[in-house]
Image (cartoon, rainbow, N blue to C red; front, side, top):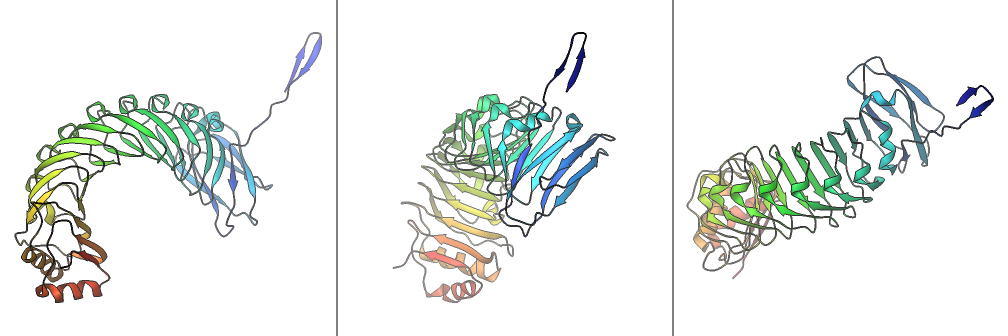
Length: 381
């Protein structure tokens, strides 16, 4: 840049940094960038190999693809009206670089880095402050505290076992609607009564500990995944009918009659020290797609019911004494599943724990299901 002053000329050099680098590890695929740019505004997209595209925004999201002929790392530069870039999404090849480079998009609403094996580094405090959506998959190089997320963030998806994200769920942005932090190295703690009021989906997989009562999972939340160290208490009857996906692992002490689980739930995984009990032949179980119940549950009977076709992909029941299905219950369940083709091809059935073994009465049912690729694991005599 040149400035003309009364007594001298001043020069300064403006260095334009790449927004990121694309690492071409397999040149069979195009690298794709999705943009949404304010109508009438323009940016130059420099692909890093001598090719530059001029992009004129029309207010809608559009995609641009580029084929790289060799396996190298190329710098991606975006110049022009960067403040008018509203959405930036990459796909096709991994990208790398510091997260703070995206701050040049001063009005960016969505940033999505969705391909496997990305190498985006930095602290989440450097995520552009204007974001309402931030998605980054298969990336292991981010760290930070959730209190430093953008205050207007609604959707967050961070995936990668070596990301180190910490904090309490009470510090999540109050605007949050969809939060997923999937990282074995992250530690998110807190009580579910402190979740943001408009949250619809929560997925926390890592080293943290989430506590609270089943009654605190209230509408509008519909999907819950909590991993490993959690201590969720309460009765299944208090689970909100807004919930359709309920996976809670850890040291939970959930109790109640399985017949009172909301029939809106199609995916139900509960582990830990839960003491759920009752008859497996109920409306909730009949509607299930994925089912896993372990811990200290005492499910002890199966009353035959009418099953739908091709609904269950995986079914695991591992009760403890004094629970457990007897041989007649096991036979009836297997026969009913076979006669209605309830278990999808290549699905999985596990009925172990304190369940008894099956008898010859279910030989044909087991043979039929195994011929469809279904894996069946049962106790043997």
